[in-house]
Structures are given as C-alpha cells and as structure tokens.
Amino acid sequence: MTGTTLRDRAILRISGEEAKPFLQGLLTRDVLTLKQGEPRWGGLLTAQGKALFDMILWADGDDVLIDCEDAQADALARRLTLYRLRRKVVIAREETLAVHWSLDATEAPPDPRLPALGHRWIAPPDEGGASAAFRAHRLALGVFEGAEELGQDQTLWLETNAQELGGVDYDKGCYVGQENTARMHYRAKVNRRLVAVPLNQADEKRQRAALPDMDLSIELRRVEALDPTTLPGWLAAAIAEQAAE
Figure 1 (tube, rainbow, N blue to C red):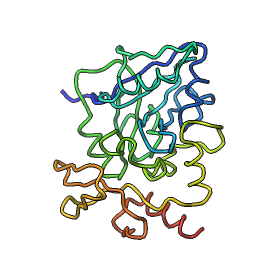
Figure 2: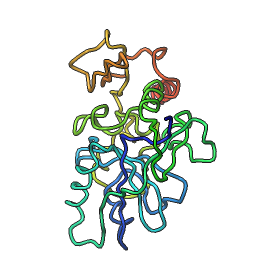
Figure 3: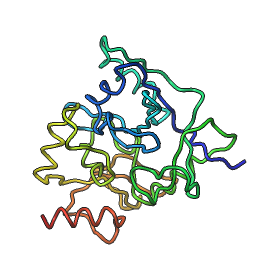
C-alpha cells in the first residue's frame, strides 16, 4: 500500500516552560520565533561548527517537535539531555505522530530547505511508506541529510550547503558552533561543498558516503574543482554569487 509516512524519521517532543529558550542556545535556527505550520531546518553542531545532527523544527503550541533521523533520534535525545542541566525541559520521543511527505499535498507546508522537495507535515502514521521515494527525489536535487550523508563531526555546517538551504540564522545570538559558522559566512570562506558525483568518479579521500543503490558518491570537494554544469541549479547559483563577491 502506498502511503506518505517517512518511516526513517522520528519525532522528539521538547516540552516544559523553558523548552524554546533551551533550544535557542543550542541550534542554528531561531527557535523563539518558530510558528505553527512554518517548519525550519537546522542543526546541532560541535563547538568547532561541524554538523552533529540535522533536523526540522516544528512548533506545537509551546512545545517544539524535532523531526529527525530515526536511527539517530536516541543519540540526539541523549546529547540534548547533556545540555539540559536543571532546566525545566522534558525530552521524549513522540510515538503517536509521524513525519509525512508528498509532492502533491499542496495544503501542507513546503519542505523548508527547498520548495522543489515537496510538502511535509506531521500526523499519525499511515499504513504505507514514502521513505524510498523521498530519498530518491531529495538526492536528485542534491540535498543531503542525516549522519551518513553529512558526516558527524566531519563537515562544517556551511560546507553542507546549510546557508543556501535555510539552515542558519545569523542574527539569533549565540549557539553551539556559532563563532566559526559566523566567521566563515562573513569572510565568505566556504571553500568546500558537499556534492554528489557518479560512483565511478568517486574520490575516497573526499567521500562522506557511498550509495551504490543510487550510483552516487557524496563528497566534500573544493569549490574551484567543481563543474557548475554538473551541480543542481540552486547550488551552482549560490557558488557563482559567492565568487562574484
């Protein structure tokens, strides 16, 4: 049966009177201004500004729902718990809800990274699944996510194309990894980019993930070595704009 549930995604509910201020000091996106029905993609970084976890944030009243990789959900919850200290915050899996995706559900919010990715919403799970279809569509657009593709503590957040995909706010104040991320942005020093190349062109020294089923290698390559004609249009335009500055 065909469905819309992304079964490789999980939801963490962050609740309690300090939930939003707690996340505000950790994540790359502004959580205090998060609105119902307007999800935001962001990350939790190392102190050096490297990606640890990426996620999509949803407002649910005073709570925040974190739409994250199912295989990393427990690790993300543990990491957040380390930062919680004595704050009045509860971090727990939300088992009654699931993440859904469709290209045609125009009544649902567009994916916050790139409108071409389609529409995304949170609801109880259905009986089918859409994970494989979404993954193929996402990779065809050159958008990466999750520990395997982004690399944990390996890739600087802006090197994952996070700025172009709306994954960082520069005016929200401090968060983990903010100093190096802001420095790269203001000095226009994003010298490497995460890109997908055919598997037969793979360079193991630059490889973050090999995806044989998609015939792709996800790699961190220097900008000057990239052929703009092989890049997705949104990324080629961003690199050209940076070069012109």
